[in-house]
Length: 309
Image (cartoon, rainbow, N blue to C red):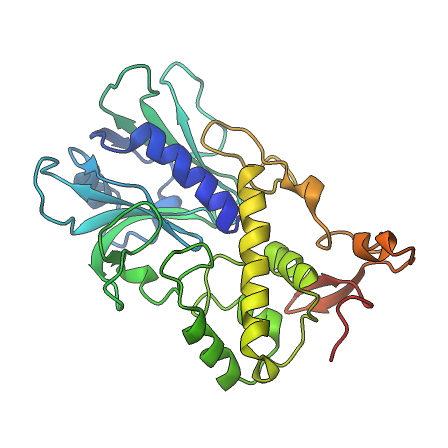
């Protein structure tokens, strides 16, 4: 499933191509992909046609487009189009001349602008993702809702989501106190989107390897420097992933132009079971990466570098 870097790559592409443009038509070839819009296809279309996309905003893995019917007004937006990529969702910006993809679910057309493509296509092979229009509500801390906007607003369905490590308003002290008050393992806490958003299985394993911490370390044993170290490790690994265009293991994750990311070539732990730990190898040691079952998934780590203290 796409994590913060992959969704941010998509956000930046959408910001470039559709920010400030008006939606002129909406087609929904497969209504299953707007199932979260409970009022159905016609209401979905009615909320979008004629609206202008003000911004393209992200918090964690959530992506939304604030909408307005009066683009020249200074009033804050009240609604947004929310996109969740799920496991295989793709948002592609294309021209009308390009043939429709096999798994096309929703198609939005935009007002012409220079040489910019006029269509936004939502492709989803496994139909775990989707689009819906919803209301925007004030953020609880009165700070901007996410990356890409200065509005202190967030979709109702994402209001419970914690800020992510790359958010300038991320409160590390608040996170530290929450970690200390819980009786759980560190990786389980990192994957809790209500605590800290955007980190999934891949980047949790990578951040824990970089910070030399065991995935099952009890959070109540975390000291303030430990919390700072794991969050800085998450920031570093996700920033490098952003520079590489995200992590692609197959053709299901692509950016808005259909290109894959190549950060998979730089992974140190995730997916490397039985392969040498790079850090140990630099010391002349032959430790290999281990994989343990974890929350119906896997956790990859070095048994020497990431010992349980």
